[in-house]
Length: 210
Image: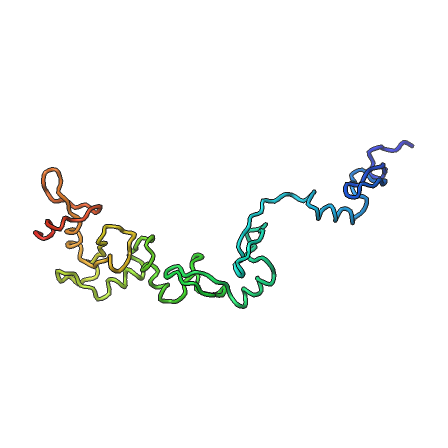
């Protein structure tokens, strides 16, 4: 009876990849024992080389190698401490550093130190466009009256004095009616006629004559 030379039961002489000692191995066996396989695996010769990057721990700020985006802490101790003590974060509005728990006030990964900062999130942020549906817009129009006497809320607008829509500081905002708002964005065209242009501000000499 002939024996298949490719059978897995046939043993051949091989050299272990870890200890480099000879042993009788099966067809696909490359280590002489399980201990040599584990030692070789710990050296990182078989494990895939993953791209690792240093990330700061959210609790102790220590840099560590993170192999998964789900890892946020450098150790189990920091993970447990963060759940009980909280982590140090920065307020999105006033940039104040404070310690917060995972269940604290957080919207779209933006932290707020108080309810006042959350309600006035457009107050100190100069890179956010002012929307009519925001609470900050509604707060500006509460009990506001235009210089011409218009007080109806649907007829009021918010004017940016420096014509920069991203600068929402209170000193740069002025509540006026729609007509007075257009008077603040006028320019002379080629025919010498005043036209409305939201990109420019009215010349002070022309504004006095209106």
